[in-house]
Amino acid sequence: MTTQDTDPLRAPARTPRPPAWRAQAPVVAVVAVGGALGATARYAAALGWSTEPGAFPWATFWVNVTGCALIGVFMVLITERWPAHRLLRPFFGTGVLGGFTTFSTYAVDIRTLVGDGHPRTALAYLAATLAAALTAVWLASTLTRQALRRRPS
Image 1 (cartoon, rainbow, N blue to C red):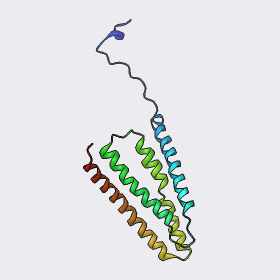
Image 2: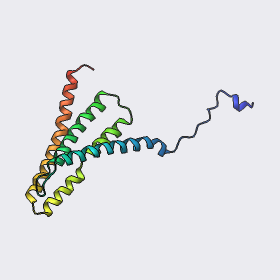
Image 3: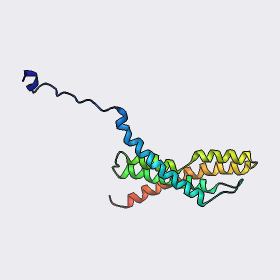
């Protein structure tokens, strides 16, 4: 052995860090799985509550409002109550709820309603979804905080 091998003052050799993609691979995987689950739930809701052409798209409206309310509850719970696992937020928040809510379909629905000659329905849908979604996330987070204050940790 050389002096350098046994020198207690010498910094230990650094192990190489894995590539950044390896650290992100689990996050990408849980977002993909969660997104598939959320999109499947949204699709099931759309099948169960079909909309006639030109009518108010209630299924998409309620999916988005419900998803926003769940986001409000979830974010309060993981940021203010539970020390969440590092993959929970990407799985449930980004994946499941991101796949469940569908603001792209909301935009397409508005365009289709206008294109099919139903501009008033499109405007009502545009305004109602925005107001209801924002109200849902605010109300759900507020009520969750109040409920948590009443319960001991």
